[in-house]
Image 1 (tube, each protein chain N blue to C red):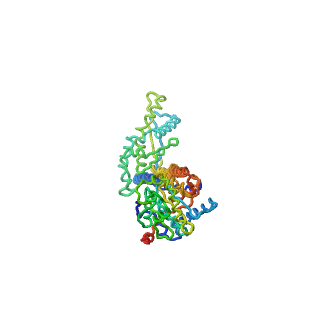
Image 2 (cartoon, one colour):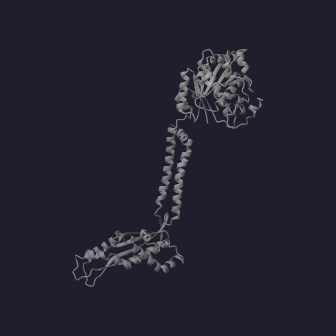
Image 3 (tube, chains in turn yellow, orange):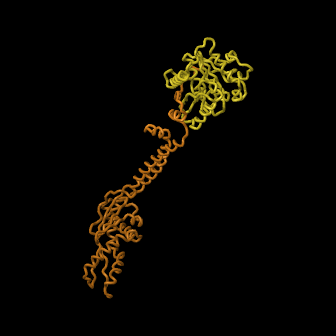
Length: 229
Length: 273
């Protein structure tokens, strides 16, 4: 389970809207949106984005959480998926307990959007729901290698399409790219991947290796987030 | 690369510059402290005495004045170039002369004049420097205290007048042995003070040039520290700017997330309960 400590990044709801910290996430979401519009002839109503770190970075989940908050506050129905099955705990950022989630869905015989909807937890942000990592103890990459992953991700999309097909976004938070194939497996099935680079910590070698690993899985790496340490 | 980029590299590892300069500054400070404590190291005093070297006429009367002039100059040259002033005997003689001159020294410099280490013959020898023009020898004394400089210069003049024959007569014997008749006595060395010891003046101390060296060391330390920051930056593989990301990965940087300040967290956590 993830830990909550004083050193953790705060959520942007703790800040005024006009702080540089808050503005940075609005800029990030805006640029992600621009990428949809530039790279797609027909803009789908539901978008999927994976945030993956090029190196071990404990605050990666805060980046994903903040992006999800901005997306929801911008009027997009948003589902934040904690796909970091190696070091779960994203729901703690929102003060939620761990319940059934992604790993439990992947262990199901059949996955439907209704089952996914049952696993979603509402947050204090309207239009933002969380699918936590789940309670299954099976190792992360083993579950993500399951052929059911693609169908599961499709079901998560379908939840957002209900009932009125308003614009929405699914944001996946995965384990760091070097940790294993998790990010590659998820990246191959998402519309775009954003790579997190931690300034002064991520080495050139790690960044290049992460990009190559993602591209080998045919993931669409559209940009990077630079995090100041 | 822009100047600002250079400055960023230096500022990122300013501690390296501070460390190198700090270590050298400690060393320099320690050395400077000792220089300040060492008398005469940074500031000294100088007094000069001028002596004329000549020959005493002999009873059998050598009338060749040209020989006298040549020999006088040879004597002056021997006095200047030989290690006469650095010998223990000369230093001891000067030291003894100072002890006899105490009365005059006290008249000039008060009842308790600071003469420095005047009883050390080797220190006296190292304080003396001589030069000559023909048979006129100027002896300069550089000493840590004004009273000591004058006292030594004065004593050197007196010792030279009284004892020079003992030190330099061998020169005459060597030069004259071929020209004199067998029953002739060679002339004796004579010396007279033609300008008494001058009042002490302030001069630069013997170690004053070390201050320039120390300043240079600090400058070199600064340059070395800056060079080290560039070397460390060159060896550092970590990404620091979004330009590096674009150059390396060929993808845009969608956002730069700044360091978060520390707001209260009760809003987000509390409202979820």
